[in-house]
Image (cartoon, rainbow, N blue to C red; front, side):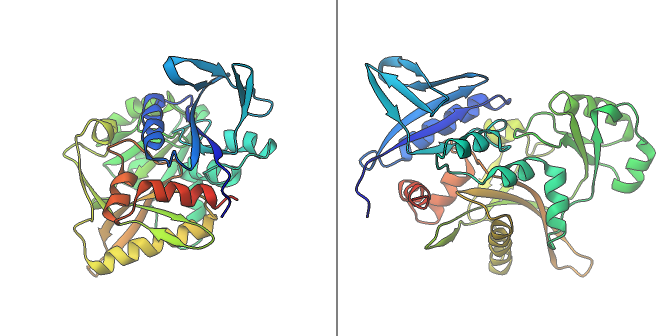
Length: 333
């Protein structure tokens, strides 16, 4: 084993609506990492201003030429970046491209996979070709914001349906639309977040989510979490303000659990993912009464706050987050 004490940057912040959530994820990761094994720093990225947090509320700017910082005359260079930015630039391939250019290993998928998974419409249609079941959807671009056929949308997708930003890492801008009269306001709300908007068929079923990571030596798929909320859907308040029950393991059959875990592992391999991902599904019934697993979306930088799904699933699996993070880091070396 390499006994060198690596220096790790937990990269957080970003330019999306979930900036504050990302900072909380960074704190959760900072607490979970093995500090005896690694020197850990939190690096905050916002626009063009990047800085590292130091003790006593001090900060130092990041030198973007090599992703380093200098403090009291000493230059510190990082060996690894653990990315926990929800949204741009951490979840769409932008910062991954930067790290590729400077040859710095990082915790997430590569540029192509990040860009693909960030665009829900593109991802769903890509994975449909590999046999995944996904809800039918329609893509509208900003140039079509006021030029669409509401009757055609209703005929194809039915009501209610979901209107959501097609490429956005947050829960903002999402609406459950119950009639065509509600479409204009919902579309306007989504277009405020993203220039491409996805209108998606509503599926009535059991929502679940499954985390997974793989290394050269092992494949780990976490227990399934069932998501129950009295809200119209799993919105921002449900996700971050406690308006939800998160039940791990989910109250489903062993056979369905195994099928969900197998599908999660299969998708991980199809996309050639890296690090921890989390896949959201909704379980509906086929005409013959059997379960149908529908893919909703893939999170490549899942939340790591105290209430996030992944820490819950890691604990339910009987694992230590410290060991999981070590697995992920050391797999790059």
